[in-house]
Length: 261
Image (cartoon, rainbow, N blue to C red; front, side, top):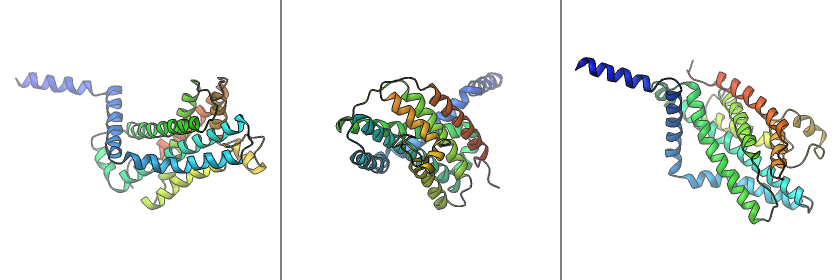
């Protein structure tokens, strides 16, 4: 009887190791975030969409009266909304877990650093995808002409990974949850405002043009502009964003506070 029990325990232990355990841990972290968000999901959406929607209508009013300029205003608002949501929500979750000592409980489950980060990232991806979908619906209602292609999906994924990695890196230096919240919010807003996302590089001022060459959001906006115009020649943008994503996620996971000094 004891031998059978021991064999059963060893079999169960084998079933939750390796990639299966990683995916299980990642799904558990995602489910925890989803349960916490489900009680007040409408506030998440409202707080995220009010500013990007306002920027879309403001930019549309200032843009020339042609379909391409209006489409660019929509793309800029989508990049702005997804970026702001990814940095704000990811930063908030990381800071709450760290300073409210929930991270210690997660570590003792045990959950690996990478599984935790990607679980939170998956939750941010759902929120960002929802924000982009709502903005597309608003654009259709406003009469914006665009054609959805497959190229939108990898561009959104690479952009989310890039901004999430930067958020992991930035909030690791936060001395308190209040300061960390300011840091993560400023990261998303400033990155979008100083990058040429609402207009092309040719239309950008000189200072913004210089920053645009090293900003991942510029490549995200250019790629989304092409893909929503019915084009699929976005391999350059996807490749550049892939490099940004690999580098930013690497330094973000490296600096993630998994143990407090």
